Image 1 (cartoon, rainbow, N blue to C red):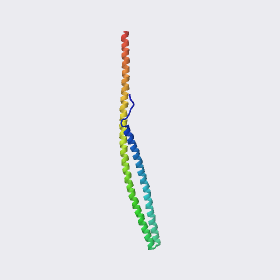
Image 2 (cartoon, helix red, strand yellow):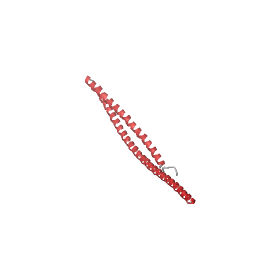
Image 3 (cartoon, rainbow, N blue to C red):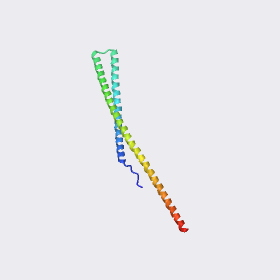
Image 4 (spheres, rainbow, N blue to C red):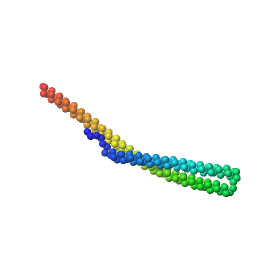
Length: 154
């Protein structure tokens, strides 16, 4: 009997390649999110440090010009925090889209692998039945030959 061949093997290979690509894309998107979280955390730390320094300087007394410099600096740092927060939201949205695409690719690949497994089981069952029939045919042929020999001797 011929060797097992899954008819959708090329499709399965393609879907596996797509899955690998989706996995890499998701990994990159996740790395971008993590990196942006670090950038945002640093921006928040910078703003907080500036605010703390401003409070300390206010307690010690400072000129109006220096106070305005601190307030302007804090406003700039706040805008930076807001900008980095928006970037993070966008990157998280992209990461979610990549994750959804990854899940879809994984489901498609798994369904094809399951189908291949079912077809393989059918093939193995068919082979076992064919071998069993061949053995039965051999046994029947030997019996027939033995019966003919017995009839010829009698």
